Structure formats: C-alpha cells, structure tokens
Length: 304
Ligand SMILES: NC(=[NH2+])NCCC[C@H](N)C(=O)O
Image (tube, rainbow, N blue to C red):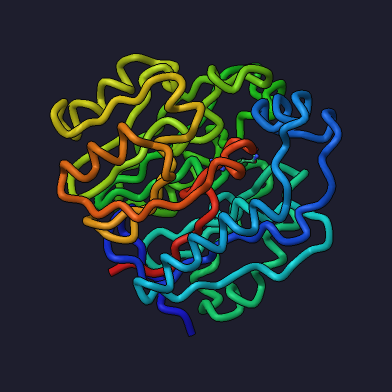
C-alpha cells in the first residue's frame, strides 16, 4: 500500500506520477484544443512533435532517478494526451482527491488505476460531478491550501476556467483543519499572455519560504498582494508577462533546495541559485507550447 503524504510543494519528494508524451496523438484540430497556446502553435505550424516531447520528459525522469524518487507512469492510451498528470488528481496529507477535469481529458484518470489501487480505499476521495477542479489549481502549503479559481458568471464560456466555487467549498469541507485561500485568476480563451490557465501558471512557492509570481495572472489585486505579504516582498520573484507565457512559475521542486527548471529560464535560474537552490536544468520548451510545464506534468504522492 502507498502511504501518501503531502503537506506542501517543496518537502523532499519520494514518489510521484510523471505524465507521458507517448502516443500523444496527431496535431489536434483547432476546435479540439482547450488552451490558447496550443491553438497558437497549431496555427503557426509549430505544434510540438511527439518524439521531442518524449525526450524532454525522459530528461525529467532521469533527474528524478538521480534523486532516488519512485516514479510511476500512466498506462498508455492510444493517441491521447497524457502529459499533464498534475491535473487529474491531487494529494493533500494522506488523501488522494480525484479531480473533476475537463471532459476532453477525463480518460487520463483511468490510466493511473495501477497507482490508485495501491491507496487504501478510504483515502480516495471522489467529489460530486458539479465540483470542477484540476490539480494545477491546488497547492497545499502547510496550514494552508491555495486554490486558483474563477467565479465569474461567464465561467461556462471559459474552457480555460477549470476550478469553480463549488469545488473550493468542497475542499474546505474535506480539510476543516486547513485554511483554504482561493485566488481569482485571469482567463482568456484566445490570448495565452492574458491567461492563467491554472494557479501554477502564475504562482508557485519554492524553497522554505519563497515564491514565484506574476501579478497580472490575478484578477484581484488584493489577492495578489495577500500572497506577496504572506511570503514577504524580498522572498518573492516577480516574473514578466513573457516569463509567465514561457511558464517560469511552473518549475518543480524535489526538495527545499533542489528544483527542476527549464534550461532557458536564465533570469529565474540565476535567482534560484542566489537563494542557495540547486537547479537541475532540463529542456522543456516543446512541452511548454501546450501551456504546461514541469509542475503540470508531475503528480506528487509522497514528500517527507
Ligand atoms: N497544471 C497545469 N497548469 N496544467 C496545464 C495543462 C495544459 C493543457 N493544455 C490543458 O489545457 O489542460
């Protein structure tokens, strides 16, 4: 049996599900895409090739191996995108919560049954169907759970809005001992530079007490300010619109002092090193074209 344990985003990682780019399928039709950045690349003829994405994910697997992390991979569904494991479920404490993900992506959950089978049944939580939530929006941070959401009346018009108020309330009810703090995110179906697809596309804690953040990803300035005050101005690394677009907030922590990051994130990687953090660089620019990066493709199961 798997003894799940996740309290935050950065404690030493022991077990994780890493997505797969194998049998990712043909280039989607524009009408079948569900994020504006993929759309852009399809139109420009620069949509990533499966073989390149497989190589990028292999580089991540190698780093995880180097740090003795147990890595699970999804079963392969023919011609189906299974890169972004983060979104299909999430672990908080010893609970495994099935995310009610976009219908276009709902087969992804079935492909990790071999992992779910190893979790005691009483720890697997399935939310009511009208609670929409994706793991990219959920961040346990010790006594807090940070959740990205969109509560506008036009929620149904946004394929980029993945977590609703009902789900935030449901998480609050399941974890009464945690403070659930939600953040309204800026959504655009057409402009990736104005779209925070998930909370991890504009914010992520790193190290013991630091964070990466992009102000414009937040719809409500006070909510952005709350995070800056929570971590302290000097502990926060503000990223630009282009850095958000390139997914700089979406690196992945193996521990408080080791992260996996993209090799072209020069300004961020320099800052991380200045904070005493070891940066394991991998190439991930092809996967980034699908509006997801390293945090998005990992689903942590056990941290110290
Ligand atoms: N946790 C994340 N930010 N995941 C990114 C998922 C990207 C994927 N193209 C989607 O739209 O669903």
